Image 1: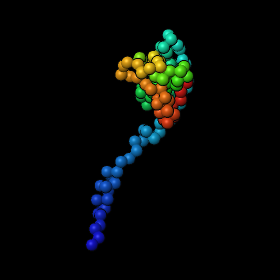
Image 2: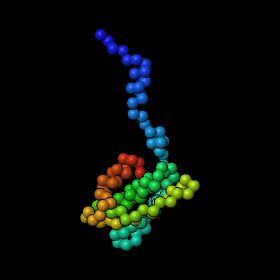
Image 3: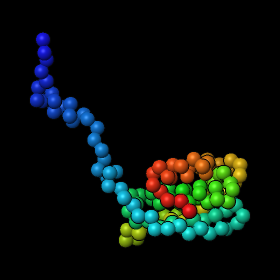
Image 4: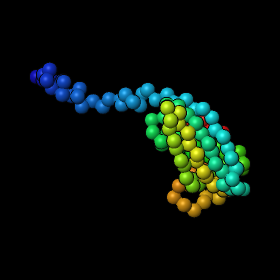
Length: 129
């Protein structure tokens, strides 16, 4: 005996099918550059600019990627987030992210393994220093 799915049943099943969030599929930021400012031996500021950010978090991620690559370039394996200030004006986003860099895992909650972070940045298409 074959069971038939009614039109209404099929429509209900289709409604339960997950769909892609349209805002995610059109995310195409333009990364406009990173300026690095060494504040102390282990304290660095990264000024980043971009267009097309969805939120402040996108700008903060750009700063994180810059910090992770910078730590590797300097021969360090870790970074710790100190603060990130983000501003947006007319679609242009600017961030000032400050990180400490170190050879050993620093104390704190917002620590970054630089090699892991750089790999994640490459996977998501966020440029580094």
